[in-house]
Length: 118
Length: 118
DNA sequence: CCCCTTGTTCGATGATCGTAGAACATCGAA
DNA sequence: TTCGATGTTCTACGATCATCGAACAAGGGG
Image: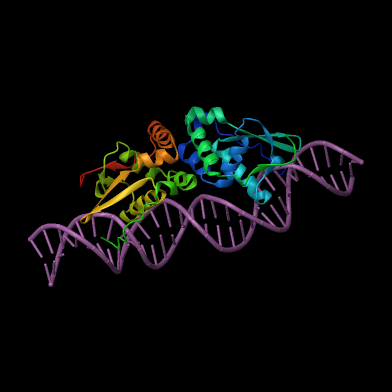
């Protein structure tokens, strides 16, 4: 698809505290993480957020660059997963803490799953 | 001191995930949190960071507004403490996770304690 | 081969951020 | 009361950010 220069995914050892926290400092991105938190791979098009397609693409890139998610391309579609083990390896407990708080405070509720590839 | 309009400190219930994560998304601020992590109150002037006085004041304000630290004024000086219990109450485990990662990765090492009020 | 779908990238815009220096306010001390 | 120390606020600047729409690239399907 569009200029897809084989998206770069940082190695586990390359994750930094600041970039991960920065990536998690946005409601929409927290919402994406929540949607992916069950560990299942989701289709890009399945993600429903109250922002333009290009903006969602941007947020997915920030999460990917931070090493929080992984985006896989298959044909003309993309599939996203949470790199839970990698984040856990670098920052033990962080995702659990953030997910628990996000759930309790309803942060990221704006992001949902809709019809689309799964 | 300068226009000290009785610094506002948010109530425990007012802490939000996004503002706390945003506040922790800066090396200098993480450094301040590290310096305060032993629970002891520190004098403002004791904080040594490679930024201008006004910039450090700004960072302390961000931390204070996020509910992460508390600033107390006594005479002409200020004393800062970490609101560990409050942050723990709202986001259990978050500070521990961040402090552990910060220590491991040496994030915030630029902030130290120097001579001054304690 | 043409077209439709799917995401990415580009360009632009308004907002926020980190930073610094100068001015200021407040308090204690001389 | 005058002065020095201590932080805060103001103003400004460059950088980054979230956002959008439009253009674009890569496949798949007809």
